[in-house]
Image 1: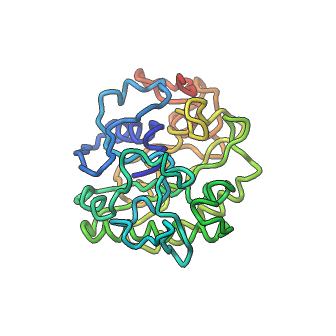
Image 2: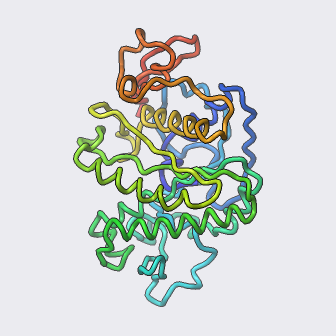
Image 3: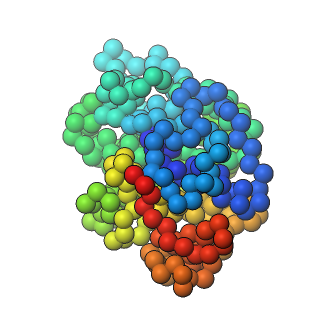
Length: 313
């Protein structure tokens, strides 16, 4: 359940294919949640696209939205000025990038009760709908509309994010107490279109750690960290600021690893260390664990470790 990433990236589809490859029965029925997609609206074509081209993988991909678009049942608590209070802060009731109603899309709101009912009985739900909370604060134009021009600071965005995620998590658990919820980390900023921005990486790590501390106070809820290689082409040119096939592959690896570590999965991937393997591109010489950890390589249909590109964009 997310903003643009599930709509413009392949990681939900790659995750579906990876779980099948690991031998799991994967049942993904339609949720009937407003705005549901079963595959990306647009995305790079990855080297292993054939593994998931025929798969139906329900997801929400509400482009430009922030966490509050999934956290309320209506706008009844919004004032005449179009704002509501979240964690003691004034936040726009408009969904869409920069809280611009022209960018909301065909679905104005995903009611939190409908979201919870739609995923009732699920073993696992992944939430990836909060990355724009912080980005809206970073952008002066978006801050003006989303936060009423108030500089709420990074800590303020964490408070808003935590309140919204807690509302979603508790609604889901009210319907399905045993459902495990994974909250996906915010991936790094970029530089020069396709590379990780090393300068702002400490800020992103601090943000993720703060959100992790909040959400992991909820039962059956875990935070999934994401680590991208530095100095490698990891972001798209098709949909700017979103990870490409390599980034999606890393995200899937990190999700599967977290699911195994938290005993959600009984079988996982043999993985080499991040330090030794994540940025390796000498694919033909890598052993299986290092190949499966690398962002630049993948195990092809013949079982060989092969080069994994950015994807056709």
